[in-house]
Image (cartoon, rainbow, N blue to C red; front, side):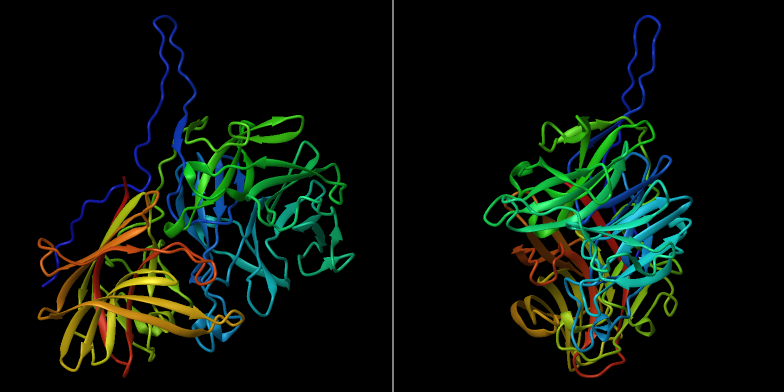
Length: 537
């Protein structure tokens, strides 16, 4: 019997208010403003690059090994964002993108650059994986998701595109600039690039995440600086010419709300000449979250927030924008395609999943033998969100075969998993922790430490699995429970510690739905719904 689909969903974006100023005499309406509270997106969206066309802002972020990749988000007020699409559906540079002969955990699509120029949008990114090269895509409309690959060029690490006033095209990476041919296919001039500044004595560590803009004839390179043994900070290098000389200024050094120091992001203006910065901050288990900072200009230098401090609250002098979707959303699996918020772990095996074989359900079939979730194809993910969030999935287990493992997890390099395991004719529900070890070079799985903490026999082929996550300061905890009727819930685990580890998956924790075979293929589970409750306090 089909499960009745109802669930109370709290908007990810919260309440949007309009501030109106009225007077007793000659009332004058104040320009509409949009209030904001940082972080503006309480979820994993790092390596921010943003561009503008009129009143439309487009933001691109990093999702590495998740497919489709290079997520593009749209806004008109810089506060409320909706998903527009992805630059690509899959990458096929090597078999590791298919979870064969290794993995691309923590690699794949990294720090992208998005730019609008003369009616077209361009995205540049450089996968941190062999063969080392860069991709440049173009589209006339990010809303339609019709991105076209222009070229695969040489590798540019954490690079930023610039279309200059004379239409010449440049790529900036750390302290180098490259000029590209008009068709983007080759480097003009020095193939090793032009060094435009030398690190000063204070720069003893990383300089990366370059995002270049041009304002009033001057060039500004925004990048993260992380001197060895010192605090992470945001710096700007400024010059009157593309090739320099550049001078440096530290513009942000703030451990906002007690989390690690914010850094790496971009500068953007609006139609009215106001300026802003979008910066991300590490927030532990939830990942790296975007912060919005108003910008003033003094002596041709950007001043972020309150003299280099991130504001908790503020107002953007733009009318409130109402997104057509949220960054994280429920799915009843009743449409002909998955909702735009979903991403697969590595390239999906499209023959092993279906929305049509059983109407109103997502069918996940086992198409490959695997002995752990990290090696299993077709794990479907969405971001977890803070400060708190929860989600429930409903599974029909009728189609499982001996040795199949299906379930719902808080997925990361260290994962907490609710697993339904079929052994012979019996099914068991377990809670277990899985910790992956990866080869540094190939990211091949060298081992998975598994610990089963609870097991119960199942007598029903209908089951509801629930995860509730708390990302408040000092928490990063998840609770796991199950039900057979959506009314009475049984705890399987409490206060599981979620971990962000850049040496492993390098991402925030994800809600993950999975099904894989350990003995023989051909089994399946049907997912009736995924219902998420986000933005809880």
